[in-house]
Length: 306
Image 1: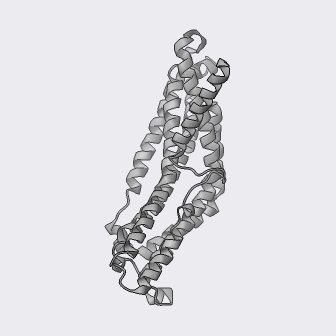
Image 2: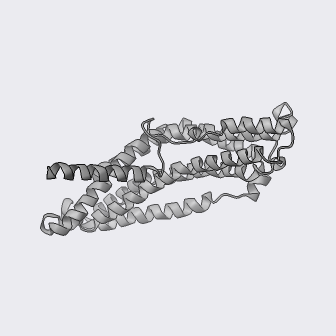
Image 3: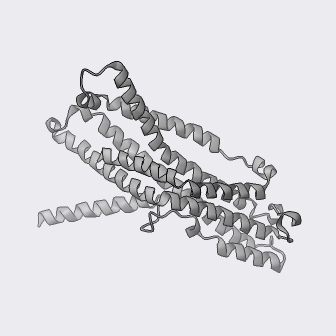
């Protein structure tokens, strides 16, 4: 099951690389959002994308290095004993490069959805002060665009970018979450089984199985947390628009109408990631799946007792 989960990551990475046109469209939408915001506003509210990239890549290297280290006894039992040092080094080097490539899927997903959520957060910060919202000049837009309309335009670009990302990560998310969840369950079973049946578990896997259990849980958490970031920001933005529209900040009827127009387009479903339409991806899956497994276990125990 662990090898199948690794193959799922490899196939998912190939799938994402084939969707480069949609990824380019998402990047173009984000670049348009940056143009609408302006360099001054972006510099005032810098994102932590570079810090997250550095920390994420360090964690990827640690995870890959740790996996290779705890799997050395397994490789020794599988590889021939008369292999030279050059051949062994080449095998481990190619294996490490392949694992880094597949592990970076989770880093790519996290950074992509973080960028979307960061720019939605900029709209949230300025929702209380519509006069400070960025506005397109008449020369650029060809018409006298109001500030609320410009915010709606920015939101539409962000939703379009999120939609492109969802189409890219939808199938890999379903594939990887399923394989990782099965891997977590299988490794947890072996860990529990090893306490009562020590002689039946190979000693070569004594370190690798708990390591895989922990790292797979972290991968699931990263994927679910990344999918929830834009949704949470859209939810907060919607609440803020409702509060502003009912306050004294929107003095004119036109401002209220524009705020209501933006409110109608501020929908969580526009940025929510779904696993090929089967279910929505987010942190709510952890208690839902856990409760389902507990209920299934209780049902099996009742059947056995009967």
